[in-house]
Length: 418
Ligand SMILES: NC(=O)c1ccc[n+]([C@@H]2O[C@H](COP(=O)([O-])OP(=O)(O)OC[C@H]3O[C@@H](n4cnc5c(N)ncnc54)[C@H](O)[C@@H]3O)[C@@H](O)[C@H]2O)c1
View 1 (cartoon, rainbow, N blue to C red):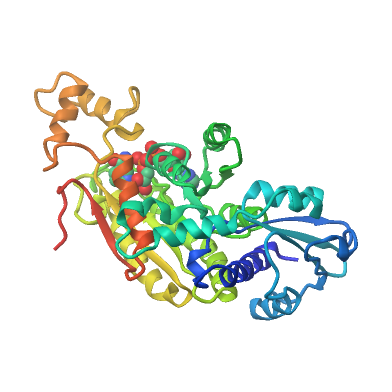
View 2: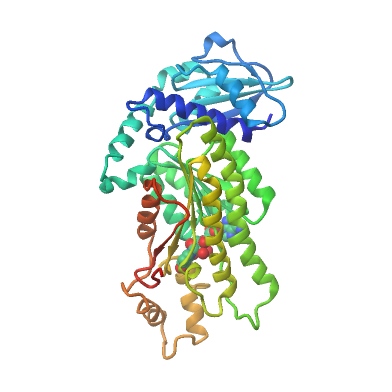
């Protein structure tokens, strides 16, 4: 029984049930606050009558999502209301799917059964009401609310821009998967955010975006723990500077593999979950946003591997946008300027400012502050790009229903579109 096939369909179905229950019946008004946690059990669980909705159905063989959806649709009545528990059984095993407004409620339902649901009333309607409010025409002031109750995933979320995005999304009410190859860093950040919030608002997810097996496993984990996703931020990226006359091929290929191929792999496996949700919930919209760079819009001297991977990323964004529009999936890029206060530039040991000081890249500079001032002076707005600048762009792209395949510069005027 492939959880990656079934869970997003269950989530999509639940989104459409929640949408029907909401005032106005707008699928995106309630494409939030629906978590589908699952767990495999040895045999069919406690008798159906004990559950709010208990539906043992035969698993559909062959991995045909339309056939699975038809079976699920026949089993789950449109009148079902959240939270509920669903049991999908094949000849050997049963997988329980708990559908609830938050991960904590879904987990409780999964572990303790329906009486847990009775003591934890559904939060979806209140979330839906808030979203409906945020979606009033001209509601830019409340733009951050567009992610409230959504399930997001940020690759490279343990530090730098990724960490800024994780913190921003959590503070705006999203649940966030912190997907990073630095598993310890991701876990530390998740622990901090969960402690602050007093509930589970983030989970760490080990992933190497350049390795397809790792990416596949990561999205299987996502499917079994939250059922699916609403927003994917493909942010993990690396930079290895070097001129074309000297750079070794291994460095060039590593940058390409992480920045370019990594975006392909994340879109491929995340996109399958998003597509399944949309099949089960017509009108549902979701977002894939690549954190690109100003170096994806203008060449970067002695940094061709990086700039090439980022220019290529925009080609992928445009192409994936054309392909996935059919499933309500928008694909866009944010192209930030330099994040001078982030670790890439400001790390006191390995940061670019220290390196440039040591190698005399900035003529006459004798301190890190002078090197920084030199680079800040290249920006018309006189400072580096920061987390909140990127968050504003992200909220805009999620809120904007009528745009896809775009690359949005956030560079303080340093790079302007032709
Ligand atoms: N820092 C800047 O000035 C700047 C400017 C424009 C765009 N960007 C882009 O922003 C993104 C983040 O950059 P940053 O400077 O915050 O980087 P960073 O080095 O501070 O953090 C990158 C994170 O990605 C993770 N990571 C690296 N390779 C990975 C892989 N293969 N799989 C999973 N995780 C991996 C790292 O563990 C780290 O947590 C990148 O795509 C970068 O190109 C950065």
